[in-house]
Image 1 (tube, rainbow, N blue to C red):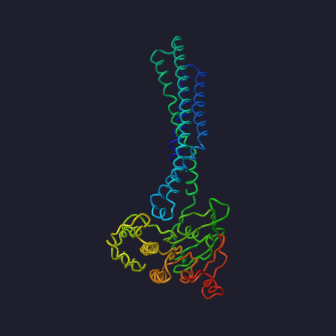
Image 2: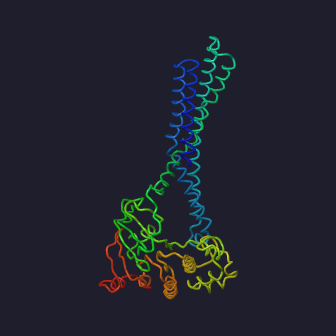
Image 3: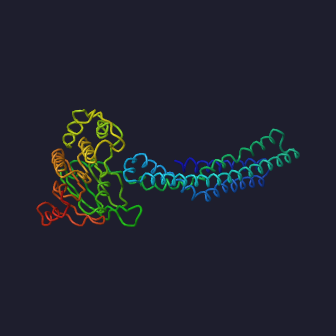
Length: 427
Protein backbone atom coordinates (compact mmCIF):
# COMPACT_ATOMS: atom_id res chain seq x y z
CA UNK A 1 0.00 0.00 0.00
CA UNK A 2 2.77 2.45 0.91
CA UNK A 3 4.69 1.70 -2.30
CA UNK A 4 1.57 2.44 -4.34
CA UNK A 5 0.34 5.50 -2.44
CA UNK A 6 3.62 7.19 -1.57
CA UNK A 7 5.77 6.38 -4.62
CA UNK A 8 3.98 5.06 -7.69
CA UNK A 9 0.89 7.31 -7.68
CA UNK A 10 2.78 10.58 -6.93
CA UNK A 11 5.43 9.72 -9.55
CA UNK A 12 2.82 8.99 -12.21
CA UNK A 13 0.88 12.17 -11.42
CA UNK A 14 4.05 14.28 -11.45
CA UNK A 15 5.25 12.92 -14.80
CA UNK A 16 1.81 13.46 -16.34
CA UNK A 17 1.70 17.05 -15.09
CA UNK A 18 5.19 17.72 -16.44
CA UNK A 19 4.10 16.53 -19.90
CA UNK A 20 0.92 18.64 -19.77
CA UNK A 21 2.87 21.73 -18.65
CA UNK A 22 5.43 21.23 -21.40
CA UNK A 23 2.78 20.84 -24.08
CA UNK A 24 0.86 23.87 -22.80
CA UNK A 25 3.94 26.08 -22.79
CA UNK A 26 4.92 24.78 -26.22
CA UNK A 27 1.57 25.83 -27.68
CA UNK A 28 2.03 29.37 -26.37
CA UNK A 29 5.78 30.04 -26.54
CA UNK A 30 7.02 27.44 -29.03
CA UNK A 31 8.42 23.94 -28.84
CA UNK A 32 11.80 24.99 -27.43
CA UNK A 33 10.55 26.44 -24.12
CA UNK A 34 8.00 23.60 -23.81
CA UNK A 35 10.63 20.88 -24.17
CA UNK A 36 12.97 22.72 -21.82
CA UNK A 37 10.28 23.02 -19.15
CA UNK A 38 9.30 19.35 -19.42
CA UNK A 39 12.91 18.17 -19.32
CA UNK A 40 13.76 20.47 -16.41
CA UNK A 41 10.80 19.29 -14.37
CA UNK A 42 11.72 15.66 -15.00
CA UNK A 43 15.37 16.12 -14.10
CA UNK A 44 14.81 18.23 -10.98
CA UNK A 45 11.46 16.80 -9.86
CA UNK A 46 12.56 13.17 -10.13
CA UNK A 47 16.28 13.68 -9.54
CA UNK A 48 15.93 15.25 -6.08
CA UNK A 49 13.67 12.47 -4.68
CA UNK A 50 15.94 9.84 -6.25
CA UNK A 51 19.02 11.39 -4.64
CA UNK A 52 17.17 11.59 -1.34
CA UNK A 53 16.08 7.94 -1.62
CA UNK A 54 19.65 6.78 -2.22
CA UNK A 55 20.94 8.79 0.74
CA UNK A 56 18.10 7.68 3.04
CA UNK A 57 17.88 4.01 2.02
CA UNK A 58 20.19 2.65 4.72
CA UNK A 59 18.82 4.95 7.43
CA UNK A 60 15.22 4.08 6.53
CA UNK A 61 15.89 0.38 6.95
CA UNK A 62 17.77 1.05 10.19
CA UNK A 63 14.75 2.96 11.45
CA UNK A 64 12.42 0.05 10.59
CA UNK A 65 14.64 -2.46 12.41
CA UNK A 66 15.04 -0.11 15.38
CA UNK A 67 11.27 0.40 15.63
CA UNK A 68 10.67 -3.36 15.63
CA UNK A 69 13.41 -3.90 18.21
CA UNK A 70 12.10 -1.17 20.50
CA UNK A 71 8.55 -2.52 20.27
CA UNK A 72 9.61 -6.11 20.97
CA UNK A 73 11.94 -5.20 23.85
CA UNK A 74 9.35 -2.92 25.44
CA UNK A 75 6.71 -5.68 25.26
CA UNK A 76 9.17 -8.17 26.77
CA UNK A 77 9.92 -5.68 29.56
CA UNK A 78 6.24 -5.09 30.40
CA UNK A 79 5.02 -8.67 29.99
CA UNK A 80 8.00 -10.41 31.59
CA UNK A 81 8.78 -8.20 34.57
CA UNK A 82 8.34 -11.01 37.09
CA UNK A 83 10.63 -13.41 35.21
CA UNK A 84 13.20 -10.67 34.57
CA UNK A 85 13.33 -9.73 38.26
CA UNK A 86 13.66 -13.36 39.32
CA UNK A 87 16.48 -13.89 36.81
CA UNK A 88 18.19 -10.61 37.72
CA UNK A 89 17.85 -9.40 34.12
CA UNK A 90 15.61 -6.36 34.64
CA UNK A 91 18.45 -3.75 34.43
CA UNK A 92 19.84 -5.45 31.33
CA UNK A 93 16.42 -5.42 29.68
CA UNK A 94 15.97 -1.74 30.51
CA UNK A 95 19.35 -1.01 28.92
CA UNK A 96 18.32 -2.99 25.83
CA UNK A 97 15.19 -0.83 25.53
CA UNK A 98 17.32 2.30 25.89
CA UNK A 99 19.74 1.09 23.17
CA UNK A 100 16.89 0.44 20.78
CA UNK A 101 15.47 3.88 21.52
CA UNK A 102 18.85 5.52 20.83
CA UNK A 103 19.18 3.65 17.54
CA UNK A 104 15.71 4.83 16.52
CA UNK A 105 16.53 8.43 17.46
CA UNK A 106 19.78 8.35 15.43
CA UNK A 107 17.98 7.01 12.35
CA UNK A 108 15.24 9.65 12.73
CA UNK A 109 17.85 12.41 12.98
CA UNK A 110 19.63 11.23 9.83
CA UNK A 111 16.35 11.03 7.90
CA UNK A 112 15.31 14.49 9.07
CA UNK A 113 18.59 15.96 7.83
CA UNK A 114 18.17 14.32 4.41
CA UNK A 115 14.56 15.51 4.21
CA UNK A 116 15.68 19.06 5.02
CA UNK A 117 18.26 18.99 2.21
CA UNK A 118 15.77 17.62 -0.31
CA UNK A 119 13.22 20.22 0.77
CA UNK A 120 15.80 22.97 0.33
CA UNK A 121 16.51 21.65 -3.16
CA UNK A 122 12.83 21.85 -4.07
CA UNK A 123 12.66 25.36 -2.61
CA UNK A 124 15.58 26.54 -4.76
CA UNK A 125 14.09 24.85 -7.85
CA UNK A 126 10.72 26.50 -7.21
CA UNK A 127 12.35 29.92 -6.88
CA UNK A 128 14.26 29.45 -10.15
CA UNK A 129 11.10 28.26 -11.90
CA UNK A 130 9.03 31.24 -10.70
CA UNK A 131 11.77 33.68 -11.72
CA UNK A 132 11.94 32.06 -15.16
CA UNK A 133 8.15 32.23 -15.48
CA UNK A 134 8.17 35.94 -14.63
CA UNK A 135 10.86 36.69 -17.23
CA UNK A 136 9.16 34.59 -19.90
CA UNK A 137 5.72 36.03 -19.18
CA UNK A 138 7.12 39.56 -19.34
CA UNK A 139 8.86 38.91 -22.65
CA UNK A 140 5.76 37.34 -24.19
CA UNK A 141 3.57 40.14 -22.92
CA UNK A 142 5.86 42.81 -24.49
CA UNK A 143 5.70 40.93 -27.78
CA UNK A 144 1.92 40.89 -27.55
CA UNK A 145 1.79 37.10 -27.63
CA UNK A 146 -0.12 36.95 -24.34
CA UNK A 147 -2.13 39.44 -22.32
CA UNK A 148 -2.03 40.27 -18.61
CA UNK A 149 -4.34 37.52 -17.28
CA UNK A 150 -2.43 34.82 -19.18
CA UNK A 151 0.87 36.20 -17.87
CA UNK A 152 -0.50 35.97 -14.31
CA UNK A 153 -1.58 32.38 -15.01
CA UNK A 154 2.00 31.62 -16.08
CA UNK A 155 3.34 32.68 -12.71
CA UNK A 156 0.62 30.89 -10.71
CA UNK A 157 1.20 27.74 -12.74
CA UNK A 158 4.91 27.91 -12.00
CA UNK A 159 4.12 28.01 -8.28
CA UNK A 160 2.04 24.84 -8.52
CA UNK A 161 3.84 22.73 -11.09
CA UNK A 162 6.45 21.36 -8.66
CA UNK A 163 3.94 20.38 -5.96
CA UNK A 164 3.33 16.82 -7.27
CA UNK A 165 7.08 16.22 -7.37
CA UNK A 166 7.42 17.51 -3.82
CA UNK A 167 4.85 14.89 -2.81
CA UNK A 168 7.42 12.24 -3.74
CA UNK A 169 9.80 13.49 -1.08
CA UNK A 170 8.44 11.54 1.88
CA UNK A 171 7.92 8.37 -0.11
CA UNK A 172 11.47 8.52 -1.44
CA UNK A 173 12.89 8.93 2.07
CA UNK A 174 10.90 5.92 3.29
CA UNK A 175 11.67 3.78 0.24
CA UNK A 176 14.05 1.52 2.18
CA UNK A 177 11.38 0.71 4.76
CA UNK A 178 8.71 0.31 2.08
CA UNK A 179 10.84 -2.13 0.06
CA UNK A 180 11.70 -4.04 3.24
CA UNK A 181 7.99 -4.47 4.01
CA UNK A 182 7.24 -5.42 0.40
CA UNK A 183 10.01 -8.03 0.50
CA UNK A 184 8.47 -9.60 3.59
CA UNK A 185 4.95 -9.64 2.20
CA UNK A 186 5.81 -10.67 -1.34
CA UNK A 187 6.56 -14.36 -0.67
CA UNK A 188 3.22 -14.67 1.19
CA UNK A 189 1.15 -13.39 -1.71
CA UNK A 190 -0.54 -15.88 -3.97
CA UNK A 191 1.46 -16.85 -7.03
CA UNK A 192 -1.60 -17.24 -9.22
CA UNK A 193 -1.96 -20.99 -8.80
CA UNK A 194 -5.47 -22.07 -7.81
CA UNK A 195 -5.99 -22.46 -4.09
CA UNK A 196 -6.67 -25.99 -2.98
CA UNK A 197 -10.20 -26.79 -1.88
CA UNK A 198 -11.75 -29.67 0.05
CA UNK A 199 -11.55 -33.05 -1.68
CA UNK A 200 -14.72 -34.94 -2.46
CA UNK A 201 -15.58 -37.52 0.14
CA UNK A 202 -15.88 -40.26 -2.46
CA UNK A 203 -12.25 -39.80 -3.44
CA UNK A 204 -11.27 -41.88 -0.41
CA UNK A 205 -8.41 -39.49 0.44
CA UNK A 206 -8.12 -37.22 3.48
CA UNK A 207 -4.66 -35.79 2.77
CA UNK A 208 -2.47 -36.03 -0.31
CA UNK A 209 0.95 -34.40 -0.64
CA UNK A 210 2.70 -34.83 -3.98
CA UNK A 211 6.42 -34.09 -4.48
CA UNK A 212 6.41 -30.99 -2.29
CA UNK A 213 9.40 -28.68 -1.81
CA UNK A 214 9.54 -25.93 0.79
CA UNK A 215 12.73 -23.84 1.10
CA UNK A 216 13.82 -22.16 4.30
CA UNK A 217 13.76 -18.38 3.96
CA UNK A 218 16.95 -17.56 5.85
CA UNK A 219 19.15 -20.48 4.78
CA UNK A 220 19.82 -22.63 1.75
CA UNK A 221 18.71 -25.86 3.46
CA UNK A 222 15.21 -27.02 2.51
CA UNK A 223 12.54 -27.38 5.17
CA UNK A 224 10.87 -30.02 2.99
CA UNK A 225 12.45 -31.77 0.02
CA UNK A 226 10.43 -33.90 -2.42
CA UNK A 227 7.89 -35.07 0.17
CA UNK A 228 4.95 -37.24 -0.89
CA UNK A 229 2.32 -39.01 1.21
CA UNK A 230 -1.31 -40.11 1.07
CA UNK A 231 -3.58 -40.51 4.10
CA UNK A 232 -6.99 -42.14 3.99
CA UNK A 233 -10.04 -40.88 5.91
CA UNK A 234 -10.02 -42.09 9.51
CA UNK A 235 -6.34 -43.06 9.40
CA UNK A 236 -3.97 -42.10 12.21
CA UNK A 237 -0.43 -41.22 11.17
CA UNK A 238 2.52 -40.07 13.29
CA UNK A 239 5.34 -37.95 11.91
CA UNK A 240 8.42 -38.79 13.96
CA UNK A 241 11.97 -37.55 13.85
CA UNK A 242 14.41 -35.19 15.51
CA UNK A 243 13.72 -31.49 15.99
CA UNK A 244 14.16 -29.64 12.69
CA UNK A 245 13.31 -32.70 10.59
CA UNK A 246 10.38 -30.87 8.96
CA UNK A 247 7.42 -32.27 10.92
CA UNK A 248 5.89 -28.91 11.87
CA UNK A 249 6.50 -27.53 8.38
CA UNK A 250 4.61 -30.45 6.85
CA UNK A 251 1.67 -29.92 9.22
CA UNK A 252 1.64 -26.23 8.29
CA UNK A 253 1.46 -27.12 4.60
CA UNK A 254 -1.41 -29.54 5.14
CA UNK A 255 -3.25 -26.88 7.19
CA UNK A 256 -2.84 -24.39 4.34
CA UNK A 257 -0.73 -21.96 6.37
CA UNK A 258 2.09 -22.13 3.82
CA UNK A 259 2.30 -22.88 0.11
CA UNK A 260 4.94 -25.14 -1.46
CA UNK A 261 7.31 -23.86 -4.13
CA UNK A 262 6.85 -27.14 -6.01
CA UNK A 263 4.32 -29.92 -5.80
CA UNK A 264 0.71 -29.97 -4.63
CA UNK A 265 -1.06 -30.32 -1.30
CA UNK A 266 -4.68 -31.44 -0.99
CA UNK A 267 -6.61 -31.94 2.20
CA UNK A 268 -10.05 -32.11 3.66
CA UNK A 269 -10.84 -29.25 6.04
CA UNK A 270 -8.25 -29.44 8.82
CA UNK A 271 -7.60 -27.93 12.26
CA UNK A 272 -4.01 -27.43 13.41
CA UNK A 273 -2.93 -27.55 17.05
CA UNK A 274 0.50 -25.91 17.02
CA UNK A 275 3.35 -26.42 19.47
CA UNK A 276 2.82 -22.93 20.85
CA UNK A 277 -0.26 -22.48 23.02
CA UNK A 278 -2.06 -19.32 21.86
CA UNK A 279 -4.21 -17.91 24.67
CA UNK A 280 -5.48 -14.36 24.95
CA UNK A 281 -6.26 -11.79 27.62
CA UNK A 282 -9.92 -12.67 27.89
CA UNK A 283 -12.25 -14.99 29.75
CA UNK A 284 -11.87 -18.76 29.66
CA UNK A 285 -15.22 -18.92 27.85
CA UNK A 286 -14.15 -16.53 25.09
CA UNK A 287 -10.79 -18.25 24.67
CA UNK A 288 -12.69 -21.46 23.98
CA UNK A 289 -15.27 -19.83 21.73
CA UNK A 290 -12.57 -18.74 19.31
CA UNK A 291 -13.02 -22.24 17.88
CA UNK A 292 -16.84 -22.24 17.96
CA UNK A 293 -18.46 -18.84 18.65
CA UNK A 294 -21.93 -20.34 19.05
CA UNK A 295 -20.90 -23.08 21.48
CA UNK A 296 -23.10 -23.41 24.57
CA UNK A 297 -21.71 -23.56 28.11
CA UNK A 298 -22.69 -27.23 28.19
CA UNK A 299 -20.51 -27.89 25.15
CA UNK A 300 -17.65 -25.93 26.73
CA UNK A 301 -17.78 -27.97 29.93
CA UNK A 302 -17.92 -31.15 27.87
CA UNK A 303 -14.69 -30.38 26.01
CA UNK A 304 -13.03 -29.18 29.22
CA UNK A 305 -13.89 -32.54 30.77
CA UNK A 306 -12.46 -34.35 27.75
CA UNK A 307 -9.26 -32.31 28.08
CA UNK A 308 -9.00 -33.09 31.79
CA UNK A 309 -9.41 -29.43 32.76
CA UNK A 310 -13.01 -29.20 34.00
CA UNK A 311 -12.10 -29.52 37.70
CA UNK A 312 -9.40 -26.85 37.41
CA UNK A 313 -11.71 -24.35 35.68
CA UNK A 314 -14.55 -25.10 38.12
CA UNK A 315 -12.16 -24.27 40.94
CA UNK A 316 -11.40 -20.81 39.59
CA UNK A 317 -13.18 -17.85 41.25
CA UNK A 318 -15.50 -17.14 38.31
CA UNK A 319 -15.39 -20.45 36.44
CA UNK A 320 -15.76 -19.89 32.72
CA UNK A 321 -15.94 -16.12 33.32
CA UNK A 322 -12.47 -16.03 34.90
CA UNK A 323 -10.30 -13.57 32.99
CA UNK A 324 -6.87 -14.76 31.94
CA UNK A 325 -3.87 -12.48 31.63
CA UNK A 326 -1.79 -11.96 28.52
CA UNK A 327 -0.68 -15.26 27.03
CA UNK A 328 -2.97 -17.20 29.40
CA UNK A 329 -1.46 -15.76 32.59
CA UNK A 330 -3.28 -17.34 35.52
CA UNK A 331 -2.99 -20.89 34.20
CA UNK A 332 0.03 -23.14 34.44
CA UNK A 333 1.75 -24.29 31.26
CA UNK A 334 0.04 -27.68 31.45
CA UNK A 335 -3.37 -26.13 32.07
CA UNK A 336 -2.87 -23.76 29.14
CA UNK A 337 -1.99 -26.69 26.90
CA UNK A 338 -5.11 -28.57 27.96
CA UNK A 339 -7.23 -25.47 27.33
CA UNK A 340 -5.83 -25.35 23.79
CA UNK A 341 -6.72 -29.04 23.40
CA UNK A 342 -10.25 -28.32 24.60
CA UNK A 343 -10.52 -25.63 21.96
CA UNK A 344 -9.41 -28.16 19.34
CA UNK A 345 -12.18 -30.53 20.43
CA UNK A 346 -14.74 -27.85 19.55
CA UNK A 347 -13.60 -27.84 15.93
CA UNK A 348 -15.78 -30.22 13.95
CA UNK A 349 -13.36 -30.83 11.08
CA UNK A 350 -12.56 -34.20 9.48
CA UNK A 351 -8.78 -33.79 9.90
CA UNK A 352 -6.93 -32.91 13.10
CA UNK A 353 -3.26 -31.95 12.88
CA UNK A 354 -1.55 -32.24 16.27
CA UNK A 355 1.95 -30.87 16.84
CA UNK A 356 3.22 -32.46 20.07
CA UNK A 357 -0.23 -32.22 21.70
CA UNK A 358 0.77 -33.29 25.25
CA UNK A 359 4.19 -31.63 25.48
CA UNK A 360 4.57 -30.11 28.94
CA UNK A 361 2.06 -32.44 30.63
CA UNK A 362 3.08 -35.05 33.18
CA UNK A 363 2.83 -38.66 32.07
CA UNK A 364 -0.36 -39.54 33.95
CA UNK A 365 -2.24 -36.41 32.82
CA UNK A 366 -0.96 -36.78 29.27
CA UNK A 367 -2.18 -40.37 28.98
CA UNK A 368 -5.60 -39.43 30.35
CA UNK A 369 -5.85 -36.57 27.85
CA UNK A 370 -4.75 -38.81 24.97
CA UNK A 371 -7.36 -41.41 25.93
CA UNK A 372 -10.11 -38.78 25.82
CA UNK A 373 -8.66 -37.31 22.63
CA UNK A 374 -8.73 -40.73 20.99
CA UNK A 375 -12.40 -41.17 21.89
CA UNK A 376 -13.31 -37.70 20.57
CA UNK A 377 -11.35 -38.30 17.36
CA UNK A 378 -13.37 -41.36 16.42
CA UNK A 379 -13.95 -41.24 12.65
CA UNK A 380 -11.52 -38.36 12.12
CA UNK A 381 -8.14 -38.39 10.45
CA UNK A 382 -5.24 -37.69 12.83
CA UNK A 383 -1.76 -36.54 11.83
CA UNK A 384 0.49 -36.23 14.89
CA UNK A 385 3.97 -34.69 14.85
CA UNK A 386 5.84 -36.06 17.84
CA UNK A 387 9.00 -37.42 19.36
CA UNK A 388 7.17 -38.86 22.40
CA UNK A 389 6.26 -42.53 22.50
CA UNK A 390 2.83 -42.11 24.13
CA UNK A 391 1.64 -39.86 21.29
CA UNK A 392 3.00 -42.07 18.51
CA UNK A 393 1.29 -45.12 20.07
CA UNK A 394 -2.07 -43.61 19.06
CA UNK A 395 -1.19 -44.11 15.41
CA UNK A 396 -1.19 -47.09 13.07
CA UNK A 397 1.46 -45.71 10.73
CA UNK A 398 4.79 -44.00 11.37
CA UNK A 399 6.46 -41.68 8.87
CA UNK A 400 10.07 -41.13 9.88
CA UNK A 401 11.45 -37.73 8.82
CA UNK A 402 15.01 -36.43 8.61
CA UNK A 403 16.36 -33.28 6.94
CA UNK A 404 13.04 -32.47 5.31
CA UNK A 405 12.49 -35.93 3.80
CA UNK A 406 10.42 -38.98 4.68
CA UNK A 407 13.07 -41.68 5.05
CA UNK A 408 10.92 -44.55 6.32
CA UNK A 409 7.25 -45.60 6.31
CA UNK A 410 6.24 -48.18 8.91
CA UNK A 411 2.77 -49.65 9.49
CA UNK A 412 1.69 -51.39 12.68
CA UNK A 413 2.62 -55.05 12.46
CA UNK A 414 5.47 -54.49 10.01
CA UNK A 415 9.10 -55.18 10.97
CA UNK A 416 10.64 -52.11 12.56
CA UNK A 417 7.40 -50.49 13.78
CA UNK A 418 7.78 -51.58 17.41
CA UNK A 419 11.52 -50.84 17.34
CA UNK A 420 10.86 -47.32 16.13
CA UNK A 421 8.28 -46.78 18.87
CA UNK A 422 10.73 -48.07 21.45
CA UNK A 423 13.33 -45.57 20.26
CA UNK A 424 11.10 -42.57 20.91
CA UNK A 425 11.27 -40.56 24.11
CA UNK A 426 9.36 -42.26 26.96
CA UNK A 427 7.12 -40.40 29.43
